Image 1 (tube, rainbow, N blue to C red):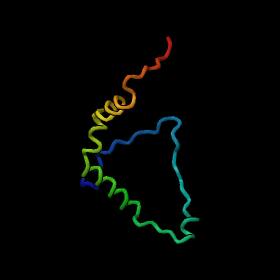
Image 2 (cartoon, rainbow, N blue to C red):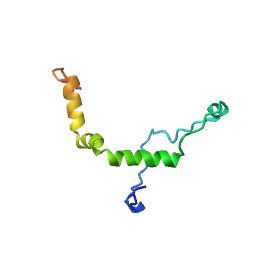
Image 3 (cartoon, rainbow, N blue to C red):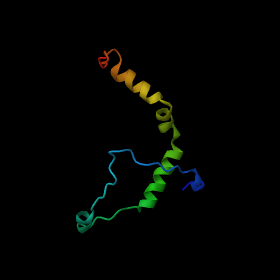
Image 4 (cartoon, one colour):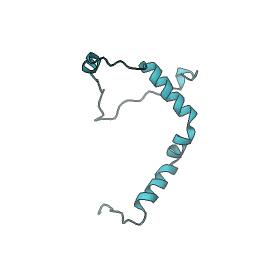
Length: 85
């Protein structure tokens, strides 16, 4: 989608216990006249483009800044339960 070579992709195996797939059956909703507004490819491209255009949103998550702010805001002053050795 971004004009990057496929060699940049790194394929990894699923971790044990992860669901292999989520297969949805949309036959009933289609019988009611529903149709998707976008194809899967269009939706995926729009999603990737949003992340590219909005680094302010994911950079603080990737850097760990978000988690620090979140835990300070929600857990500051609380005692931490630690496992007993």
